[in-house]
Amino acid sequence: MLNNHSAPESTDPQWSDPFSDKLHEECGVAAIYGHPEAATLAYLSLYALQHRGQESAGISVSDGKAIQTTKAMGHVAEIFTDSVLREMPGSMAIGHTRYSTAGDTVERNAQPFSVHCSKGRIAVAHNGNITNASELRADLEARGAIFQASSDTEVILHLVAHSREKTLAGALRDALLQLEGAFSLVFLAEDRLIVARDPQGFRPLAMGQLEYSGGTPAYVFASETCAFDLINAVYLNDVQPGEMVIVGPEGVSRERFSPERRRSQCVFEHVYFSRPDSIVFGRPVQTSRENMGRSLAIQSPAPADIVVPVPDSGNAAALGYSGESGLPYRQALIRNHYVGRTFIEPSQAIRDFGVKLKLNPVRSLLEGKSVVLVDDSIVRGTTSRKIVRMVRNAGAREVHVRISCPPTISPCFYGVDTPNRNELIAANSTIDDIRRFIEADSLAFLSLAALSDAVQDQRGEYCYACYTGNYPTELVSIDQLIRAGRKADG
Ligand code: AMP
Image 1 (tube, rainbow, N blue to C red):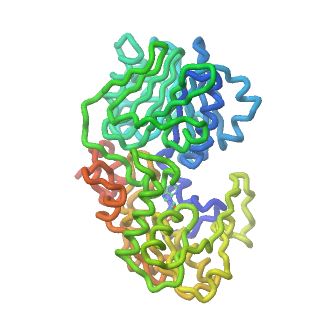
Image 2: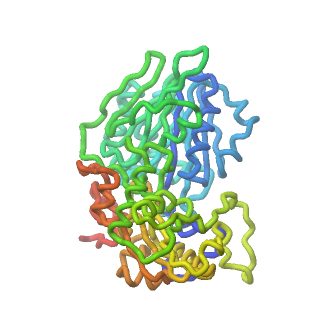
Image 3: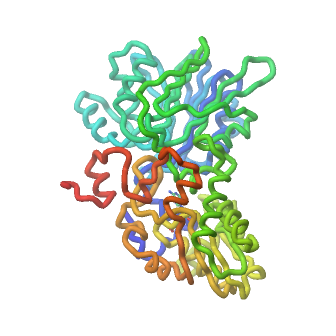
């Protein structure tokens, strides 16, 4: 079921509810090699990556002889208690955290997936979206493959199992070359770890090293470097687009499974998705966001008294805006970080609770003030509308909304959840229509050129498809063409 942005506002207490009908997955992955407490380190890494997916989490661990997987719906810390981790011995592990579609919200889609095949026992976890998954799946099914889940990731395991190559690395290379789209993958075999990134490098994957007493250094991999900080690992570099890194008893080897292609790193990782304390695609996310805010202040000044971030997504850009404009930065919206999934929905009489559960205004800061409200993005527009109302109800005289990226006009097919084109408010309305819808006194978005400058993309290495509609891969399925709002026969 797909909502329309003009439909009645959702009453789900979590205001990320616009995304509850997601078609694609947002995920985080991690991998550890060569540490006696690999499962615990994978758990801590996933804990730091929780923002990348809150629906389910899982860890596969190997003790050199067998692979064991634990996965469940829920948050990382709920699933991996002390007693669960104690039963997961081994020096190699991979982990995954996932935010899935509502229709897909079932445990059988939780990752890692693990199978026993001619190449031995293997487990895999995936961040991204395979754009030719339905075609590959139909082909595999015609050849007798039986699928247990609806996730793209299972396709990869079947491709590996069907490969005529003798070694696991060979079969993986074979499988990866058939995939289109975005993938940062971590594989676990009984005695080794293999990680890989798609040739265009859509999603991040960082490599690090961890010294520990009494052993040779362990290797760690994660979607974001904030995972390394928690486990005291040092960030070495990124797994390169089109590269496969194999870590086994013979050491580390790095090889290209695909020739270099033009990079398409997801700019939305820097706009919203990654944590500001991470280094993503080799650059600090905080720096990019402050740059976005500074440019926004230059491009779209506002007659205001204070700059207020929408926490946490607008914090860094608001800091940049404030620094550049000279307007004071005020934390006039307070976020409750403890809004849990188990919150009981209030009755009809007290609905539209939604945003209030998560944010509360500081009246003493807002009363009588003209406010610049900075947030990262507008997707359907419902969140901004609620927040603008909240700020005004708390006494603000004027509310000027500034968004630290361009209008989102096209869905993502590479692992970020955006709704269909017809539900994206900016795909169907002018900026002034959006301003009216969100009830702001003024509204401005960052320009595409300024966004590209903010991430220092001199060489055109980022994907901006959600802002331009120009996709760096072919849209191969009818579903993609329909979601992108293009004629399936065109
Ligand atoms: P809305 O305009 O009501 O659809 O919601 C936009 C807000 O949701 C933005 O301020 C972001 O902070 C957040 N957001 C944007 N994109 C995503 C996404 N792909 N997944 C989760 N939250 C998102």
